[in-house]
Image (tube, rainbow over all chains, first blue to last red; front, side, top):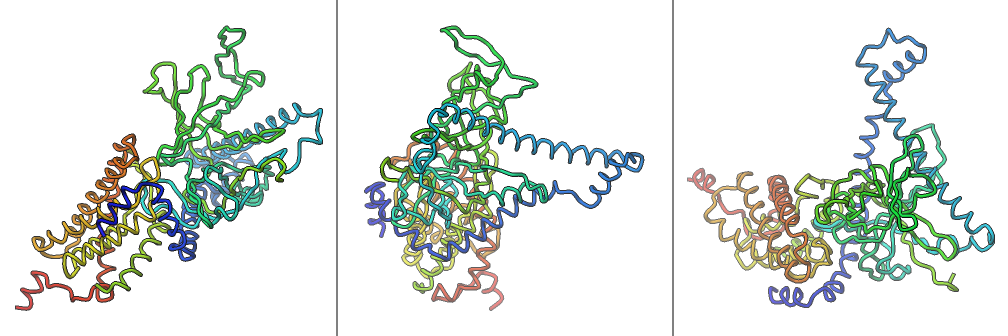
Length: 341
Length: 187
């Protein structure tokens, strides 16, 4: 048995890939049921954090008193609590609408570029040149060293190594997630969660964006604050100038996104001149034949100096847009070949 | 060893580890993402209660092979199959040799054995994967993760040992060996 292990270890990854092809079938439907429990549990844990922000009956009474102008009945602690609640909700709404505004701006920009040929923009391979294959996460890696999941769709469904994988969050899910009763319309809340690694007949390995082996060309998208624009360095006519960030100079910044092995994505070597700030977006560009689509990965949460490249360069920590520990339903984006639609 | 029942136990443990294991995993600053290694708990139980060295090492090899099959990545690149089965068999052999020197099955001893087993087998695994092509780029952070996983497994070990003790007769065909205390009580 030990000799067999040594031989398999020396045989390398090719043999490992074939031998591991049996593991999805060994895990089977029992794993699917257990994964359902796990993702529900993790989803509820995340949900508990949301519930802490929910309005209690006492909060509602305090708000009613505040609306009536009856401030005398509220203590200082009550007012602090109300202030915290209002701040949290305001920042969430601001974040939500900022994302919507950005997406709308990009869509308008891209459609404007092609307005001379509207009829050619839309179609199976013209707006998003990908086929969406629905898949479900049914197991994870046995050891926590990696951020890998197993999907119940594989080569038989058309999936192949390197295909990008996104969330499958629907309109109703999002309106429920934001606040009950608000019913905010959300056009798109899809986020990139990873790409496929090894694929087998009826299963595939999903490498999450936070895994150590995840590397992908991405783009940074800066958020424009019209009231207080940030200063950026722009190169015009071989001359570097400092200008406030606005629509005319807010170009996407190409970068390499890498998983940090735990719960974030790292982008290294970003010039300080780009002036990236927390809450800016990391997105992936998916090229179509007529227009391109950008899918967000997450938002910048920390900007620090890049230790390897030294002065003038920053390292960014990005928090994924979705809770990857509760990931269950996904779409695999399989490229559509021209003439094959 | 009752091999059929044991293989069923391995299958159930692998499935639980690959699914429900995620529910108890969490990220810790400096240590990274940690979760208990449930198969290591079974391996330590077998090493402590197993009938002989050969059976213990065979059982640990099966457990390690199950980890090899289901641990696809980890060191930055896809991993190779084999190192964990060797690491588990060697570590279980060591625990088996030590068990005569360690009397009793108190939770502290169980936890210490799990810590030792997990740290040893996982260190062998990450080192072997690095040598066999995974690279040394993340080796430092992986060692920190090994420490976290070993400590977590050691904490969970007494509960796992208690649960497996209930099923002792189903997986091991020899009765529980007498501890020093039970021998004294028998006298």
